[in-house]
Length: 201
Image (tube, one colour):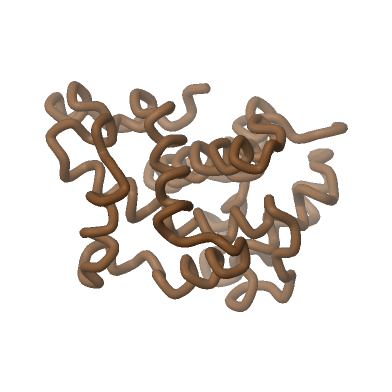
């Protein structure tokens, strides 16, 4: 393939990822990456596709994350540029592939950030529909909230990007608002207790 698309990413990911929370995370990251692409004037679908595919091997190899990613994706025809971006999101913990492009730095940053936004939105009556950055920042400052999301990695990523966490969060919130229905982050979905259907395009 010349460039990874979201349709191809969903298809490839389906062969390795089945757990709902991992599919939801993939969709959250894809939404954020699409918004980051818009910010940088890049290809929205392409960046979203890379975001969707970033945890390809995590379900099968959680203790060897990103060690079983490159070859299968290469065999599936994923371009080297996109494989490198995916590997770079584990920089310092799973790989030594340092993020250098805007896409790579964005993926490194929004991987953890999207989790805090999603958790914060699910606590609101209207979900993400009327969520603003100031509401996110209240949860961000509470270190016990979404404690599994590594804030130090998010800050490291923001530093790489030369951006403040508020700015990146605002971009990601906007991206997730665009996909609120499929992420089940609308008021209607939350009131109904509806579970996300993260493979919708």
